[in-house]
Amino acid sequence: MGSTWRLTCLLAAAFLTSPTEACAADAVDWRYSMGLHDLAVPDVGSDTFGINASASVDMRTAAGRHYFGSADLFVDRDRDHLDPDHIPVWWMLHAGTDGTWLALGGNGHLGWTADADTRMNTTSSIERQIKLLSAVVLGYGGDAVQASLLAGVGWFFQEIDDDAPKERGFTREGLRHTTVAESWGGKVAARLGGGWSLSGSARQWRDGDEWLETEYGAQLHLAADRWFKASGSEFVLSVEVHEYNLDPYPHSAQGSAVLGWNDDLLIRLSCSLPWAR
Image 1 (cartoon, rainbow, N blue to C red):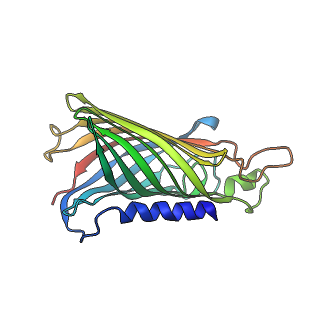
Image 2 (image 1 turned 120 degrees about the vertical axis):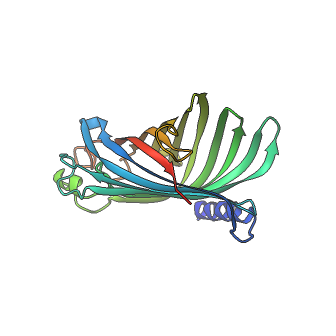
Image 3 (image 1 turned 45 degrees about the vertical axis):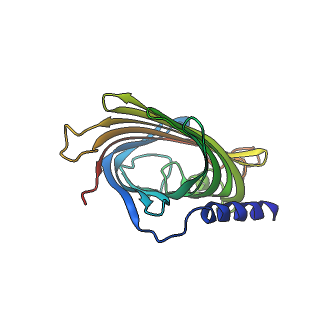
């Protein structure tokens, strides 16, 4: 009950401390991208290649409210042995809002963020994952370098696909894990000159003393205006790593986990362009 109460208070604070005026857009950046990817499972030497597309929006209203979101769709050429009955289409969704409570000296600020992330039907046997987070953010926004640290509490839900566990002798029972969890992490981004920029991030989810998931990410951007007529076009090479704790799920009498791996690695090469308005 205490954890649920803390989560409710933080989510309410995040939205109530920002302006509530009508959502008239003052600046909107719509983008779309297309590219190739590989969803790898390093523990068992698995690679699943495919194509992907995404759409994203970054919007700041006239009242000063900041919103952001993205939707990513992946179509795999699924010839892998991990899941005997995998539908080779999966997706990720992301949405959130943030704001500033207090401006600090030297381009720093103290603020907040509230966001939601989902991953569905991955080759690595993540059937569903939903994470809601409300966090306090300490940030720095320089001309060449931006960085931030965050800490908060949210809702963590994860379901393991039952096909791979079934082959290891497990039933469908106990493959869902839901909890109120703490999360902290950070990210940094830097302009490298010549149209190049680099960013990196890390975040961990924990339920008290037990870790649930660790995420790492990196992106390399290269301006592509010379290849495309649309200003703001870019090539993006990204890497995203997820490590999962399988301890909350059933284990066999011999101690074997429901899966023979506990991580996945998404590598993407995409062309990102602004949406014509």
